Amino acid sequence: MDASGTGTTGGLADDRALLGRTSTAERVADILRTRIAEGFFPPGTRLSEESIGGALGVSRNTLREAFRLLTHERLLVHELNRGVFVRVLAVDDVEDIYRTRRLVECAVVRGLGDPPFPLDGLAAAVAEGEAAARAGDWRAVSTANIHFHRELVALAGSARTDELMRSVLAELRLAFHVVDDPRTLHEPYLVRNKEILEALRAGERAAAEGLLARYLDDSIRRVAAAYARAVDEPADV
Image 1 (cartoon, rainbow, N blue to C red):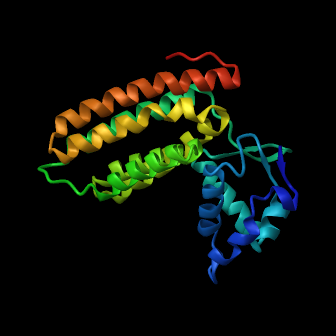
Image 2: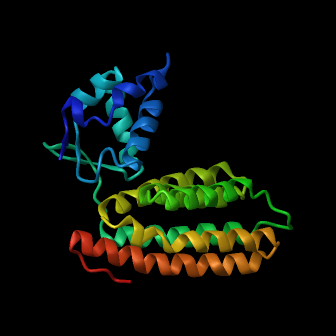
């Protein structure tokens, strides 16, 4: 795949206004990160400097710096004499992402302190997922699930933890875009997200952590197995 034509730049010209007067590499990276997460540039897509730079109206040097930032985040990979590509994860990568999530997310719930907890963001993510499921939009369910876990980690009140999880969850979405059965992948977690929310509403922090740990243990098996089938690579889990 190659994002070299005007029809394959994910509508980036529409995002030019987001750059404002400060067309920094960080802003360009934010736009590209969002487009990658939304699946406009699927894993394995070659990103053309000429077409993307033209669509966004930025210099080649600015775009290269944005590519460098996203390569550092493991979303892109540079291949010598071939260019820059959206990264294709290995099954080991998917498994490691879930191990990282378990360490961080469970620690956040464990360290919440005394109830009541500020749960409006979590409740909104649960409602978003349920509405998407009723509409049969399973990719939107996936997005709502990502929102749920970002809101969960945000309960820690740590900008550094938020930044870590933004990167981890963006990388995970590379795997989700490869698996061509989003309903099977994400439907079981609608109920489980709600169970975690209800446990936290009841002030049952330990119960919520137990639900979350089992959720992530099940996820690593389901997602790694589905991803392994999609890329024809054996899974260890």
